Length: 500
Image 1: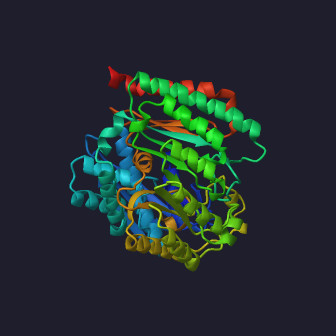
Image 2: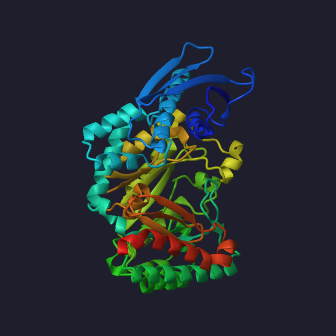
Image 3: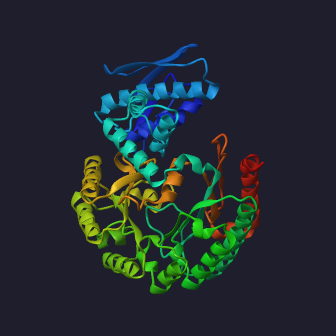
């Protein structure tokens, strides 16, 4: 699909226009010059700014579809805020034109960002009532009532789970990335390397990881910074041996401040084929009882197609083994829209989940991530259409409500099927605090290990600075000291004012 856009000369507007077009069309290309004859669709947009407002008008050429909208620009807005108002007004008109032309309704409106609930938190923190905040979301962003209601449910649940959510900015959470898995899943773009044959790299990587933990821990202790949560992700952190896990957690306890006071420690044991009695005993030794065991699907053919070398039977077996070894807060993930799966297959996954009843269930919608094997070979993977995917999400909403789960976090991704969302559900009191922290960006999260991304959030201004360790083990092994030093510099910059 090729769309020609007329009337837009500011390059900064190209990306938001592309993101909205992607909601309606797969493999959509936008052009801003050339002839109309080579385009499948031509949209004309015209905007004008004054000291008081921005007005945008648009039309789909060759049709009667037209749209016009005006938004105010206040005298107190800086240049960045004024441009955002221009961008949102153009997006508003552009979305309405495409909705009218295609007949497809986008319930998230013009929002294409990852964290919708962060927007609602911000409005409520500013002193708005729920009614005022909801009205603004509907009016300014074209978000439908159904999605606004979901956002409010999540905000309420988060504040119940973490009553001091707006006060934890002076603490930090820690993400520890271990980049190894039994195999690489077809949809995955996380740093994940098949662990077989990687013995030398694993040893070198763990050496660097211990170094980072020691140095970051020293800095946190010296500056009396509390740790809210720790999350071991990857990859699959349980891909390493029980002995290596034991040494790693021992380092965590020795290096980080007041580990016994940390609110939550999670280990992503997502691949059931990595879970053993020995590893569960190590988790018990360090009082870690929150893990993820991720079936993704309860169809063996699907698991084989996406490159997961475990069976449905093994998922169930390892779930019960984990329960027997004291794991009292288990999360499971399901993915809507996996290749070859439709409504009936997803309903079967929900029925199987009901037999186990984990404390939390994260329902992901398949996203064609740019670097994944599935995206590179898209023609090989047949996925459900928009209506089927929407039905599966509706089934998940009904099932979770009937079984006592409540939504507590949400995020969205580009190229997500049906323009839907990923939602984390839990029984009340078993929410993942780390998931809330990472989604709402209320505090600094220090990324340690391969591919680990840090977000340094200034406690005073809220400004976010990103820093990422390299994704491949060799690059990480070569320069882990450097990446550790860089993170400490960022920590000193944002916390030095606080400690004065």
